[in-house]
Amino acid sequence: MGAIISDRSGRLLLIKRGRPPARGSWSLPGGRVEPGESDGEAVRREVLEETGLRVVVGGLAGTVERPGPGGVTYVIRDYLAVPAAHARDGDGEEGEDVSPTAGDDAEDARWFTHAEAVRLPLSEGLVEALTEWRILSPDQRSNEVRQISS
Image (cartoon, rainbow, N blue to C red; front, side, top):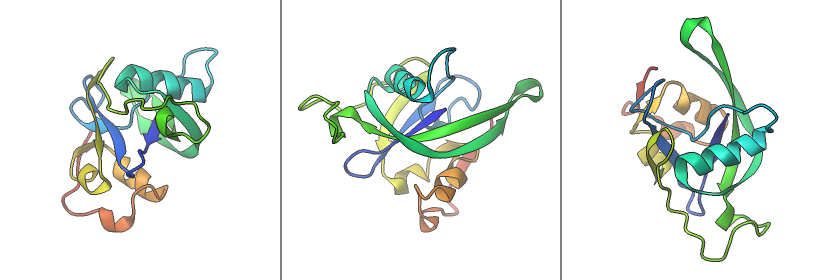
């Protein structure tokens, strides 16, 4: 599962993958759901581990399937989320920092405008998924979009 996290300015939080698959590409924070864990719990845990940020998880944005090693197919559910400090339900603390700090298997973690994000070396299929789910608008896709395969 993954997290599509936007801040108050509409920027998107991405991590630079520090390990395979797709090492060196930028992607959504996320990972595996541990046994006994709900998707929401997994999103909160993975985002905290990879970015140092607490988030409030919203609805399912969409699902993608990606090929893995040995013929395995990964089914990835991506959820909308906001930093807890920006949530209306009061989960965040007043003045809580929303500057990400890379951790776990993330080499880097940063906020990007949509225009900046589409110019990054992104994980395979990310731009298409975010466009299909209306996170990115079709006019933000350009010939400058570069993607790295896993």
